[in-house]
Image 1 (cartoon, rainbow, N blue to C red):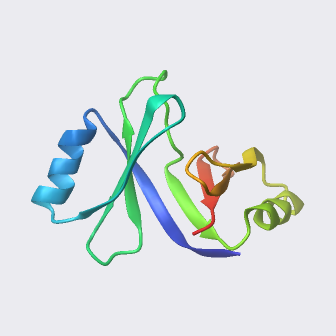
Image 2 (image 1 turned 90 degrees about the horizontal axis):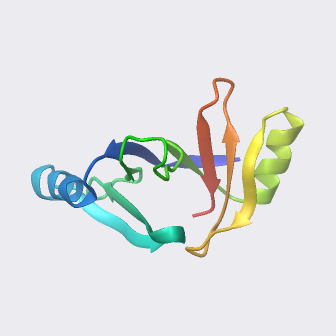
Length: 120
């Protein structure tokens, strides 16, 4: 069901400063830089040639839109959710079509951590 880890997230106070650090200082490449629902800027970086990306979650307050801290690539989001439900895993979002064109869902691990699943 799970193919690989797509991304993990870090909280940053300034997305442009984070981009400068990860791209200019560490030599990573910018993979995604899109504005989605409600003006939320979704940005990811990765080591050149790397598969797993780091997504930037802006701010530290409870009012800030946050993405789940880890995202997994699956072959079929609906089928993955169906299988997770058979294992009594709570799906808190989706499956749904996303503004960026993909399909996704969010489930909780036993400790309440959100995990995002999507297709490549």
